[in-house]
Every structure is written in C-alpha cells, then in structure tokens.
Length: 165
Length: 322
Ligand SMILES: [Fe+2]
Image 1 (cartoon, protein in one colour):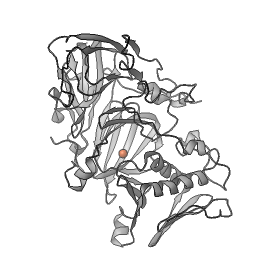
Image 2 (image 1 turned 45 degrees about the horizontal axis):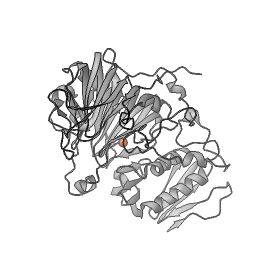
Image 3 (image 1 turned 120 degrees about the vertical axis):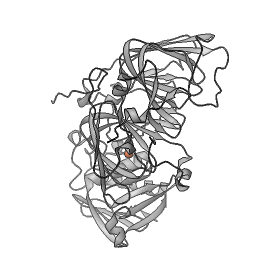
C-alpha cells in the first residue's frame, strides 16, 4: 500500500503557495499564510487573516502567557503549531455585555471560579465559551487560529501579510 | 411536476423528470433534455454532483455541474439551469432556467441517486476508494448516498453535540492520513464544568472522514461556520458562491481554478499549501484539485441577512479593501 506523508506546516517549516493571475487582481484573494503571519507577530497579537463582514479569523503567536480575556460569545482556538494550554475561568460578575462582539482584554485575573485547563497540541480545537474568561500559555512558540468576531484588539495589516502582485 | 415512477429502460435505469427537464442514464452517460436543448455528462460525474447538491441542500449560491448544467440556491426555492452561466448559450438564447421548491428538486435528485447508483459505487468517495459507476443497473448503495451531513451546533465533541469519530463508530483512519496523530487534548475540567471545558483533535477527526469534498460544520461562532472537509481528486462541481468564502489549507496542497462566475473566463489559479489562507471573491466560480487527500477548512458566513444584502447590492464582492 502507498505510504503517504501528511504535511501540516509549522513556524519552522512551511512553504507558501500563491495566486497566479490570468486576468485579475491578487488583492481580491487576500492570500496569506498563518505561519508567516505568526512568525512576524508580537506574542498574542490578534492579526486578522480572514474577515467576512463582522466575523474574523485571527492568527495568534502563542508565546509565554497571555493576558486574561473575556468573550461575549463562543470562540474556538485551533492550535496549528506547538503546545498551548488554555485556562478557563467562570467570572463572579458579568465581565462583558453578552450582546457585544469580540473578546476584550481584562486587567489581571478576574474574580471567579476556575473551570479547568486544556492542554492542546497541533490539530486540537478548544472552545472558549460565551461569558467566560480565559488565558493561554505556551512554553515555546505556538500558533493558534481563532474563530471569532472582530473586537477592539483585532489587528488589521492586510497590506503587510497579503500577496499584492 | 416531478416524474419518478417511470418504468426502467432495458439497462434497468428509470428516467426522471422535473419541470421541463428530463434525465435518462445509460451505461456511461446521463442525458439531460430541456425545451431548448440537451446535454450529456459521464454518469459518475453526474452522481458526484447531485450527491453534493443533496448533501448540502444546494449549498451557497451556484453549484455548476459543468459549464452548462447546475443549480442556484435561493434558500427555500432553487433554480435548475442549462447554459445560464455560459456566454455562448446566452448569446444564442438557448439557455434555460426553471425555479423549483427546494424539496421538489431534492426529491428528484434523491430518487435518481438511489436508482442510478450501483452497488459498490460511492459518489462521495475518491476514485481510488470506490468501484465503478458504469454498466447496467446492479443493486444500490443507499447507505452511502443517504449519509447525514455533520452540523455541529457549538462544536464537535461538546456533550449533546456531534460526536467524535472512532473505529467503533465506523470511521477508521483514512489510508492517506495513517500518519496523523490521534492523541486527544488533555482536558482537566473542574466538577460541574465538564460540558463547557471542551476540546478535540480536529485533525484526527478529519483523518477519519469517509467522504471527500463535503464541507461539514464542526464549530459555529454565531453565524461564522467552520466547514472543514477532506479533499482528494477533483471537486466535482464548479462552485459559484453568492458571497465571499474563505479557505484555510490545513494540510497538504490544493490547486484551484478560478473563473468569472457569469462567463467562465479564466481569472486565476490559486495554489494553497498548509497554513495558507485565501478568500474567494463573490463574483467568481472555482473548482479544486487535490493530488493527495488533504484537509481544507472552508469558512462560511451563514448569516440569513446575506441574501437580502446581495439583493440590495450591499454584500461585498471582495473580502477586504486594502
Ligand atoms: Fe466553494
């Protein structure tokens, strides 16, 4: 039987494809690479690599420990490189308006009950539940792709990350 | 009016009709006729196309079976067309379009899939993993053609939501993903929080997918839907979305052909490798090629506001302006 090798890519070892134009503008494809973006980002910077109306996909360089964040809706964190642990906390008081969109930064650890911890490796996807708080930690450098809604900390730098010609 | 009770032909295949369209199959081909023309397609390709339309309930926008035939979703009703997105057919005014209640066309396609799919042929499978679609009628594969599409409410593995896949549940690791790590995340939930501290191995889940080119929902952030799928060989349809759609290549490589949505003129090729992210503008159509089974994250915005925004010309054609 044929032996197949599955290629996932990583910060250390990725190669980019690209848009080959026949009659079009490459900017219309907003072509980027999650590992490329994370390799040039500050720790836990939330760089948008996808946007569909208010919804975004953020590439996050996980390095050290993140700030605590609170999210008004479910978010989903897919680890694409490294080992990233997620600490979840059920806040004692409402930290974020449930009708709002996008997660927000908190000043330190909020009061509340520990919910538990997930230790996730490449390919593992973790729910960050609505109304709760979380922080991430990575001993080395990891990459997280976050499914969320644009918020005050979403960073847009399309001109730097996308193929333009 | 749908006709699904005709007597079979000499090969054992029943003809079907819906509205002004009639469909007949022989050993190799399907023949489609409509009031202003007719068309033929290899029947394996036809079955792969109508299988996607049935599984996706016509998906988003346009599902072209080839450069002539296809469907356009209006979310409740659906158009079936011939030559509508083909410049020559339109210029010659032999293009044809008919609108159906979606259940009527789905019913016709479901009956056709059941009658025309032979034992041993699976329209969802990669060619190397299934038998032949050709020849006279022999048996059926109703188990394969009636698979339920995965639609998670929050996320796969959350208690009460879509379950994980395993050997026991009938989802062995695919031959092309034998090297994919199957370990699950370490979850340490405090008592009482077990239903909210949730995580799963998406790559292992996808390595156990038994279908190709079938985006299925694994997580939902409000209307933002992660629809990953495993791809091998070609996307049978040429998808012309009505809204911007995004791809994240999770593993391996897919090459996309991108054409103008209305005329079919070539606009670009998009080469996607692991970690690459690209949008598909709302005015194109695309088909993909995956030489090795790969994992593709299709990211859709399922907002019910979008059809209205499209009607008013308010939906963006391009993903972002910069
Ligand atoms: Fe598509």
